[in-house]
Image (cartoon, helix red, strand yellow):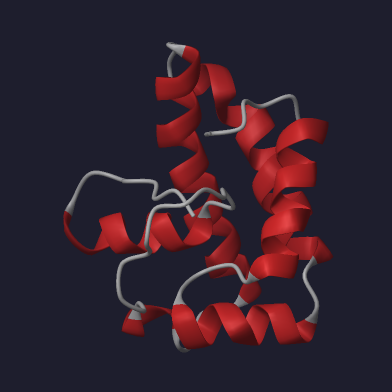
Length: 115
């Protein structure tokens, strides 16, 4: 899975875990701060990571991708099952099934796949 980096301290690991991208790069260690996150907080992490990544991929501002990233984050987390939410809490990452949902929302929300 490709890692997404959000500038600033602990936010880096948080956003890496939230952005549903796939690839062959190894993941950082599990994020212990994810243990008690609500679905809303998971959605915020996905949104923040999306803003950073998509603005870089598209060569534009974060404001320009705000609506599309909101679509992606809300859609992905709302589509996740209880098991997928728990898997995120356990690891700080989307599992394979949640990642597939994320990729579907990347496409549906007209974002660029980060690989």
